Image: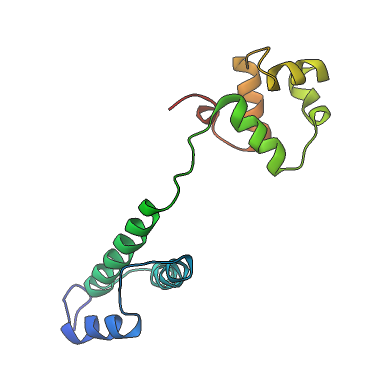
Length: 135
């Protein structure tokens, strides 16, 4: 059998190894994700494997759509999250803002981020500068 042909027996084996069902819990989603990851790690997929991957991907996507959406944050709100995630203090950002009082003013909303601030923050946190602008 060639790589590009479909094999009903092969597809049935995939279905039997991990039967696709609507996902109703985080545990089921993680189990499906493990199967997806193992398929992706295999490299080039047969058409049957690609079809199976598409089915599992659709089920994961549908489950994720039912979950609490992740808020779209940017600007100072994003900066606050990054500071908290990396367990930083205001003084850690002085090289970017020049003084701790400017850091405090930006975080409290009394001052806006400048283009230079955004460029340096993007570099510092290894994110795109676009992450600091509304989408």
